[in-house]
Length: 173
View 1 (tube, rainbow, N blue to C red):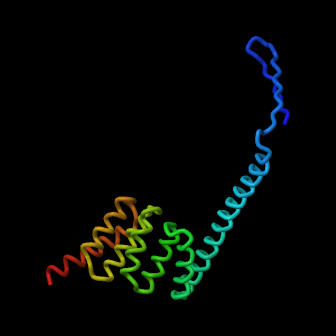
View 2 (cartoon, rainbow, N blue to C red; view 1 turned 60 degrees about the vertical axis):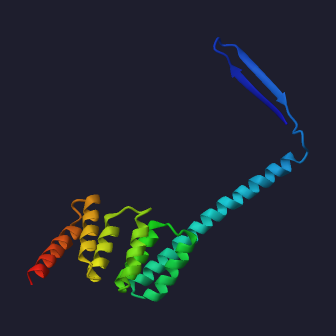
View 3 (tube, rainbow, N blue to C red; view 1 turned 30 degrees about the horizontal axis):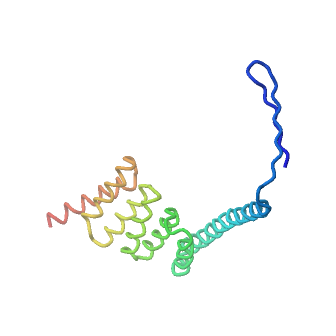
């Protein structure tokens, strides 16, 4: 392989460098080509895998929106097998669990979603689940965490006010 370069020096001198190089091992070129093919395959597989995850997530979300919970859970689980820490998928899966009154699994799923998807809606939904399970202390804590992330998160503000009124009325009755 012949390689040449033309370099302009600081004083305007032009330097030409030519080099003739042959790999010391005749297998170097096929190995390099094989390595490039493997790398190309891995990139393609990663892109294709991401597309499959997105498709499963979309299918699961559509089934969730049409209240086909059991079918949506299967699709969410398939998507999460590919990327178990994908916060957005965990969030939507948690919503399906919550809407089908599976509050304890929903709490666990929303909590895991917070590791990679920081959104006050995660904590808001955890609070809703705790409230439905009549754990007002944990619900209040989760609403306050949602408000720590976004002080003007309207849903958490109004629900926290309602929860505090509910706690007060339980104390007086």
